[in-house]
Length: 149
Image 1 (tube, rainbow, N blue to C red):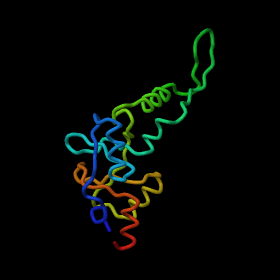
Image 2 (cartoon, rainbow, N blue to C red; image 1 turned 180 degrees about the horizontal axis):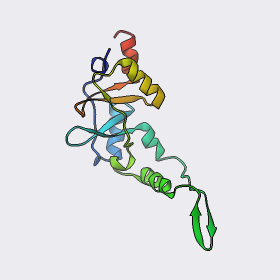
Image 3 (cartoon, rainbow, N blue to C red; image 1 turned 30 degrees about the vertical axis):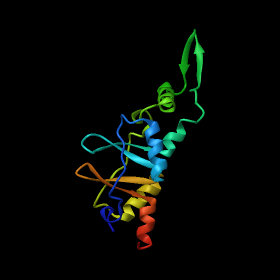
Image 4 (cartoon, one colour; image 1 turned 180 degrees about the vertical axis):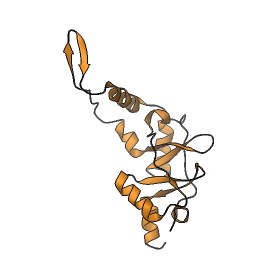
């Protein structure tokens, strides 16, 4: 079976400019755990999930540093702190979403999709045709296909 055979075709999506509050309402209203973020051309530019939203409640990790001659020397990349703060305080989807999204072509096999999900520890993958979103495959879609439904 191919992605196009098992995917959910009517995909709920959001835009980068939507608010986190809107996303929370969508997830709860449709009983889903994540949605693709698309641009005006319907290209996938991100993904926002319950995990991204829960991230907002995590404890802030301050990079280790030491002082030398009244200067701070970071032992870790301080850019990570900036990313954490932005994601934790984000109001818009673009501030909170995951930007590096794994997508699959509609001709990808179900077995390959399952392998990607397990290896990358993800619950869903957007399905594209010519770089445009045409569906989404979740773990539930794969299980449903195995059950023959």
